[in-house]
Length: 422
Ligand SMILES: [Zn+2]
Image (tube, rainbow, N blue to C red):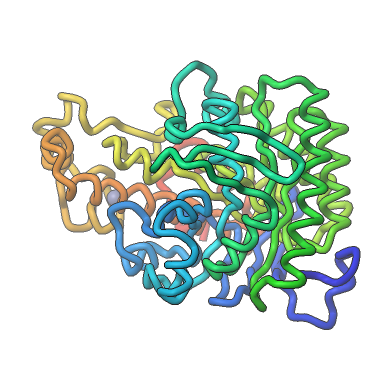
């Protein structure tokens, strides 16, 4: 953690967690490097989910081979199984999953509060509706000042997650970056509830930082989380409060609104304020990862993103393609791919396309529920996102961010965008 009050000039005695190399002149976009216990991460970067200690269908060498330098482990799932004691006994999360590079762990709050608020993940990303969240089989029993009591989706047993428990679990996991526990409020709650919840989140922030200062692993960095829903004044207040704390980095969480314009506005207010009060601390945007959102998040000064999108789409047979009109995706289950001998994407360098696997073969594998099909589409999707981020990083370095962002928005194939301007 940083020294008292955590202002940006105070960390001369310890190695900085983040250095900004280049700032874009026309926007808040910036290219930098995160310096973490298990290595460096070039930013802006996308962070694939290793929810239960594995990037679904892939091995660590696959993930590294696609160009990723950090993955995200999920405290909620890992604390339920195999449990922090066993993970610590097995040498920590890096050792257990054989991923030697940086890991960020979330606090577990998002999943717990998803059970209570119902479908919060969908709401936060602007997808309204009554569809059940993936974690809805558990249930929340009480949200109290001390923490949250909930019922495990695994065995129905009562469990507790408070600021100190979350930090203790993340300490056992030995992640490079731990996130503080926050209440993830959904879009539909009142302004009053959002304000009260935000204030409790700020109290939890102090408790997390206090616990970490006493007992946290050396070298583990802690990110605070800005809440405040869709209220500009609450977001500003939360940004100032979190920036004034000893946290090493700052994540943006909670409800980002009901559609993309609102989400971008919330990110915009927050990073504008961060630019003022914490210009050199790294920023993470929680749970956002559609292609246009990545481009626009980078423009607003976000350094890292995590999202289930590329891996989850892959498991549903949806492949990413440079087609903004179709939300950058095709559904390989569709009958029109039955005889399609082309790869997912022409000139794609991912392991699936480079080996020449046809859309027809993938269509068949997916319909037959062959695991290889899921793996190949996941490889393609994560490769696609890695190339988008690599293009954006290169564009910032070459002072061509606006130009490359416009090309990607217009459907340029990632990887080609920077090549065409060099
Ligand atoms: Zn591909």
